[in-house]
Length: 288
Image (cartoon, rainbow, N blue to C red; front, side, top):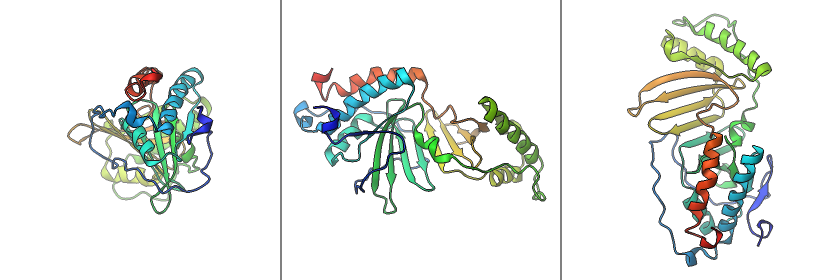
């Protein structure tokens, strides 16, 4: 049976579901505490023999990882039509990785990296918090970090008056505007380390107000936490690193397409392609 004969529909960027689906999946809270991967309890092969959709989704993922490694083009599959048991099995195999993303605005979506770096699961929700689209994606960073934030919001470097206590925020905005202009022409990332600068609380509030809050809020969990928030200025992100005690240790403004802390490196995707066989073999030994 090939993938066209089962309820796993491969799609391209921008596709939308034909009908709503009332199924839901619980995601980690944003932000949340660090979690550690624990191997799932593997059912007997006979118990998953009838879950054809889950099996074909994982076989598609094997091909998609290899295709991405070769072409560097994002790969998508629509899992919306999977039934509850098939979706539960896919969830069990993929698990939860280090990066979780919440997207607001025109579309409400939750994205969770799997235990395989570069393999993402994005679910879109309606106003009733029901899943209307369930996407499996292979890419260095999920599409919500790019396509959802095509915003047009400039940086005002000559505001009418400054609030009391604002001392060094305006030079930062001037520098940031210059970086944004250069990035459009050169695509060379730039960063401003706010932690090293003598900024007042009023400075930080003013910067936040001037840049605005974009629709993407990401949390990367490893030894500590890293929160990445999009601003309303294209390609400008606010990145905050916290230690294991929850104390802020580094705060930066980054001018880049997607901050590196969210992205999976090419070698990570290579490793995911290798590890996937080890994850699916216990379920479907004949596919080894």
